[in-house]
Length: 204
Length: 410
Image (cartoon, rainbow over all chains, first blue to last red; front, side, top):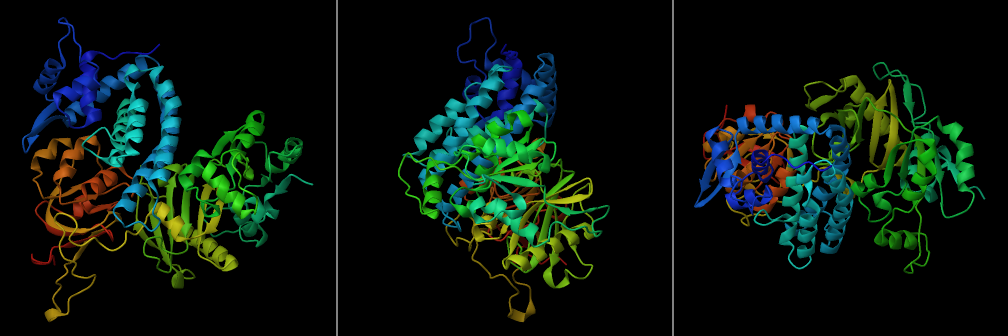
């Protein structure tokens, strides 16, 4: 049975995995775009978390975003660990993480080799086709991992479709491979990696 | 015709991985008893069997008959297809491996691995075998089955430095399984042993871990083994090994090519002068003749080159999430590692230095996206560098020096 986390945890965890994001992106990530009046919306959860010193708002050159404090990271990991044990999912998620690691190498290497090729510093340039093929293999393998994760925790739903979308867009605009300004393949993957690390309380 | 070849008889038709191990075994290099390793009883290759072509009838019975020679299991089932055999790269290799396979799953695992070539590699493989590479032709790869070794320590050894190509053996090792060695989640212990001193008791610990993995003695013994393999094969080699219960097991040995090296820590080519924000003109790699002064600056810390170019700026050491406010636009970011929360800092940094990770780390990917020079696995950087230090970061060579306009550090 897929478990849906408490709204305040969903919001705090969205800040963790996104790293630095505005309220809209966090609300979307936390699955709270369409609140009923009875549910405090994402803004209220964010302000409450800020008041408790778990997150902070920073603005760089007109662009602002929420990010986690060390206290918020510790608090979030405590909640995630309690949730994971309460639903008996620790061994299942750990097993997925082990299968994720070789895939992480595959995706990171595809991104890296493409970047080095684009920077014209590669000793062994790769083609866009080969890069997309490798990312596609990552997406295929991600499918079964996501199914296994979502069986325990609802919040893992959607990584594969976002990743696939980015890979599809990259065929005509390679910026979708590693851009930090949009939901690129690497950004989605980095987020998933952070989600797994946070959920299992690991360090990078 | 036999469908199974014993590993010690493996040749080129068995694929690069099995052929490399077979040669080592025939040269007697990896099958002798040694007492050089602390507590070691010897060097060995796990006994293995190669299934040449799993599309032919009869291999299953033959493999099951061979199993007693390999051991009780569980088994490691690997494609014997090396990247230099075609276009596959080693990360894909990890996907074409089944570990801890017990007897009941063995035949299925062999079958799966045999079918693991993608279309592009199939064409390359068919061409190498002078087979017509018509579409729809299924080409199976040779599969190596070996008794699984449960490692205490895993590592690699290169007989040439994979970054500088200098004549020195580099031994990298970590506790446990070797997969984390390449995925950037850990920085391995690194010993460097110059060739001309390999015979002497001389090894330099270039990067230590809090819990030491190898002694200098162990590192030297492993380097010695690799140098013997190099002498036998006539070319520099790249060997994967594992230590289990005092035995040094050789898991893979292959020629060290630029391709192999690029898969690990690639020396990034010359810096892209002027093409990146904050890039300073190259002052050359060594000391300026003018007045004997060190115009280039003093070497402060080195690491793995991860994003090319050179940039200068003031260091800000950022230990954690609560220290982001210290960071100012244009600073050189010095930290342990990064998570998605660090992206805004990387966006405003002139250069990045991290203590951990490799060229594949997320921090390196994000830094390249921003076009800022980056050095990763810079051991001790957070202690060796202080906020306010003016430094030049050379992300093409993995070198951080004091910035020449400021007085050099003593």
